[in-house]
Length: 141
Image (cartoon, rainbow, N blue to C red; front, side):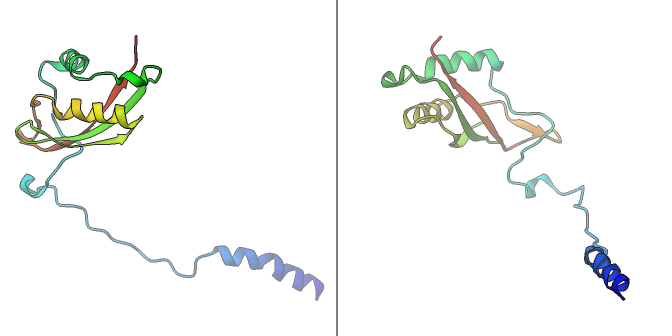
């Protein structure tokens, strides 16, 4: 009797691990031919938007457009700014994703919002709106 009781106590936790009933879940895959007009903003596309003149031109722009806050000369770091590039290349919806201090955040927003129009991203040979994130590095070197 003791052996039977011991055996049943040992098997009880095992029986709790076995699911009572399994269900088959069927999900429909998204339609591959969904028209681009139904999508308002992309996060991954065939051709990414780009700053006119490339990365070096962007660095030059930010060196001229952003002023280092005077009372923050001993602080350095990065401000991550999110923005959208429209179908025409216009910059909009600028906001700080990860900031440093309010003064640095304001300078980063001002710099990104004032950028010239970008070359828009393309999906299926059509210009599309795309969300981007850009790290703005603040350091005195």
